[in-house]
Structures are given as structure tokens and as C-alpha cells.
Image 1: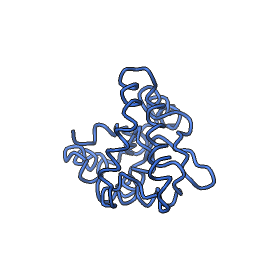
Image 2: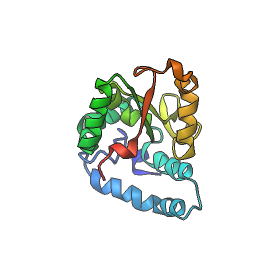
Image 3: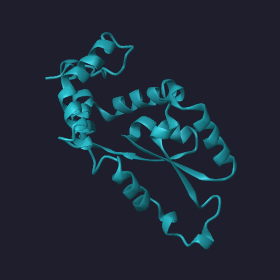
Image 4: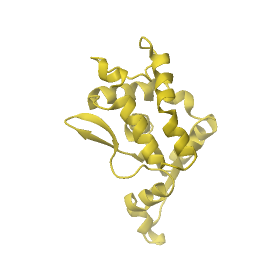
Length: 183
């Protein structure tokens, strides 16, 4: 049983402002480190490792509460993670009428508010829900590696548009989330 299953409010341990947040966050990584090492050694997939972490931190959390934490993260943390050169490029592309799609392996809940506030679209990992709660499982496949390319093709009707129909507003620019973040 994780600390979150013992906590009546299910405050996520990545909420470092909560009592014990720092400790609980790192404790979770320590407890799950065998799965992270197994992923790095290619013994288990990225998806399996991510689902282990998601289940540890968020399983059974009401989706409304999860989204509230995600919204706070989008307001308070994400802006500090974005490289200034990336933001400048986004602004330039938007001024020139391009549709910008952020493609990320992160759960879409974490970045959708930030993207919406910047008039960006998102293709990201989707989480499964049961009875209005996070299950810790990924719906379909993790939007990582080859799955990113597949999702872009699947979700992008404009990729099949004849080139003669491409315009600045019809042809999207896809930006990988890793490119946007500071190292």
C-alpha cells in the first residue's frame, strides 16, 4: 500500500508544498527505481515503467483532483521549464499563421491547459479512468518514440491533404515536448 492509499486526501507526493512532499516524491522514485533501471537496461518497455510510476503516484486519485494539480503545474511550473528560444519560435510561427501541435509522451492532462492558453494543440499520452479516478494505466500506447510518429499521422488529416491545398493555416508545425523544455 502506497502512502497515497493511506492518505484520505490523496495529495500527490509530487506536490512539494504538501507536508512531506519532497521526501515522499523521492521515496517513490527510490521504491520504483528497479523499474526505471529495468527500462534503461531495455528489460521492460517505456510504457511498463511509466505505468508503474503512474500507478504508484496517482492510482485511485479522482480525475478532478488530478486535473487541479495538473492545472497548477501548468500555471506555476511549466512556464519555467520552457526554453526562451522555443517560446520565441512558437510566437513567430503563430504570428505567421501556423497551427502548432505539441507532441509529448507526458500525460495530456499535464500540458493541455498550458497549450490551450498558448493556442496550441496537443497530441500526448492519454490516461485511463475508472469511475472518475485515475487508474495509473495508459489508454492505448504511450506517445513515445515510434508512437509519436504514428499519432501524428493518425490524428492529422492535413498530412493527407494535397500539397496544393497547404496554406500557412492548414499546414501544422509539430514540436516535440523535449525540444521545448530546458535541459
